[in-house]
Length: 543
Image 1: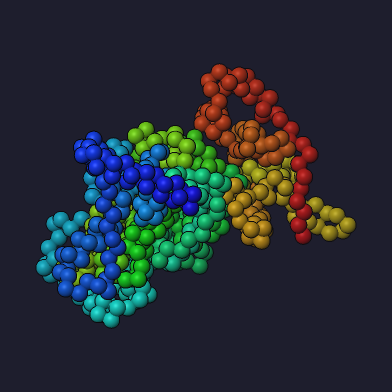
Image 2: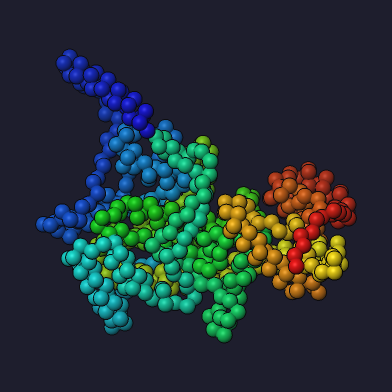
């Protein structure tokens, strides 16, 4: 960046010299203004005395919006512009785009977004009395925070109680200040494009809203859902052929499939930074939902198709941000990057995450407080019903696939040893194939200590599968075929379980990228494939 500053300074001085020469020769008309950029200042709430509420709100909205154009491959910007907008352009490279004005035209035709609405709700109606009372309490806290110029903690604490209190108390939801993990490429300081090696990232939003998971002791509650069972989700997370991440904190299964995130800033913070943080978390959550909506298989395989034509149409995430009393609600969805968005260009992501503002306002009146609560309550209801139900439906195929994957490992062990234990030196040991003691690819980013703890959990789930599925093993289940090609194998391992020839064809075409001619050749060898002898598989011993 220092080198760029120096070269820009030289170029600017040269341009000024030329402009002065043209002015002296009365030839300024030959100059052409190519573009003009307005850079709105951040709003210092300590210096807004005498401003009207409308003036404060307008200034905040202009700043929140960010740059007036998105990142391009040959982005032309001054050092000062990069200082102001570089973080936003870096998000564009990662696929994150913010639209300050909602438009259905920015929603793909195959995407069906659900939106909360204030239409048809009479805030004076007696049925709204409870929400109006909550709005009064919320407004009281807001005005108190502004009067005494309280810290970000006070704003955030009041939001947890006054705005999100009902969501926190909902037994089917999990709301927490919860870590998320992801892998990101570094942003080039000048071009703002993605460069370098992937880096493991840990972030903790001010609030994450997801689904509650359940354990055995919870099943006396009628709201407990078997498909959201903690141990079953953990089993999917840890099997090498699944790796389904349900909790944004890798290695856990406590807060499942987030549908909303909240970022708060006090007067000393940056409203635009709150948006960037919220959208960054939202993009991670959209990736999780996208993986869930696809056919079960190894996470990271790019060719996995969706479970149905509309599987991805309901995948959306909401973002709440607040800067003091000023709130924004955004809705987002994921899609492939289009050609006009520089699809295929180096330094740009393959996917795009579109975030659109659906409501914003400065909560300085009871009406504005009521509007915010009304929209949040609708999102709460959607998350606890429609969204949760869709997640449960997606999970059914995953749980069936996960059970077959573990049972396939059990079948492999039994076919070799006819038992799950061996005796050495008078001691009896439980066995598990070494190939089964592998973690999914996402675990490569974790420390050896954490990986060791996760492997202990893999052992636990293998033992559970042995006790549960041993009696159900047959020629037809858990698999008719076992793929040993590429990452599914190699020889001497349990392989990837496939229940039918039809699914075998789809597997080789979609996962391994084989064409029809190659698949036709493979069909001639299916009989031999069924007779492959996976010899010499080492066994991991444990007391």
